[in-house]
Image (cartoon, rainbow, N blue to C red; front, side, top):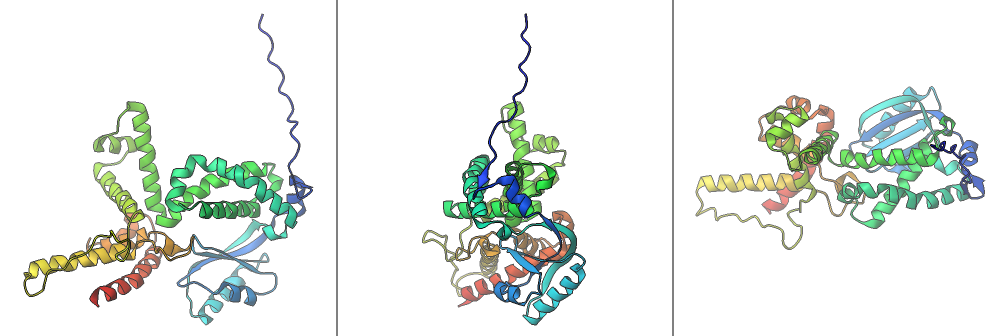
Amino acid sequence: MTQPAPAPSADTRAPLVFGGVPEAEGFAGVPITPRDRVHFRADRELPLARLRADLPDGVSVSHDEGEGLYRVDGPCGQGAVLADWVRAWCATHGATTVGLRAEADVRRRAPRDLPPAFLEDLCRHYMPVSLKRLQRNMSTIRLHLPDPDDLAQQVAEWILKAVGQYDETKGVPFGAFLATQLSKWVHDLGRNAHGRTAADTENRQQKAVAAFQAEHQRRPTERELAAYMGQSVATLRRNSQTVATLNGLRNLQSLDGTPDATEVLLPDSDEAPDQIMDEAEQTLLSHALTAACAPDPTAARGQRAAQPNVLGWATWYLTTWGGQTKTQVSADLGTSVRNMNVHADRVERALKDRLAELSE
């Protein structure tokens, strides 16, 4: 005779307590409040301390170095006024805003408003939990955060970011919310570093290849992969070139990099035919362009300069040597001309420095 299945037992786990305060009570004591928010980037790094000192009462600012994004929060109904204030302040300090937009009714809490002991214990508890959760993504993370100290700092920042976004009224435990956000933010590492289109293209191709291998126990041919992804072979080849460029820039060394870096040797101008000189000049320009888009080893972790500038490289290469207009490139890559210009301007500044060094 089949025995009846036992009734599910109630969850008897004790609630988590941080700094002497139960987790749920800690969040409920500092509930999320609606704010108006102004998002923007700038064509140069802003003096954040000065900006905070000049902000009107009741207004705060945060800066995401990885995305280069500034967020100014103020009372509801003040979004348009804050947007005008930000534009004027930036202009006064010699900066221009990029992609500025106001958003109403953004629900956030400031982590610093939580009791210090509560926040400290919460972070101490969820740090190892988060690192364990991220083990499955470690190959992706190491591409962007190879230093363990940098990884620990990034995870701590993600925990604080989750604290600021967590809405306890929705009935989802904070640990579950944090796990969901961590998966999203790991993927955003690639998007922020290399551009949304390039990172998404690479991710789709990797998933398609893995799925095909699991089904057929071998790697797909080019035609098989194109059919599997529902693309033409021409589209697959173009996307593969994007992924190849992305991978090449990840590992790129600058012209003045390691002692083993490849040297560019120029033939003597008196002995070399014009054709050889033309090829040498093209080699120099190509090398200088790629080096100008490489990560800056002196940049602080999280800054844009510390990541390869893939979109800037594609914009310069395709418009200079590929014969395409920015409008065409924008349509192909699925990004705005404005975004392309921001990345291309970074290349221009670095490229001028590189070419000046080569001409000395």
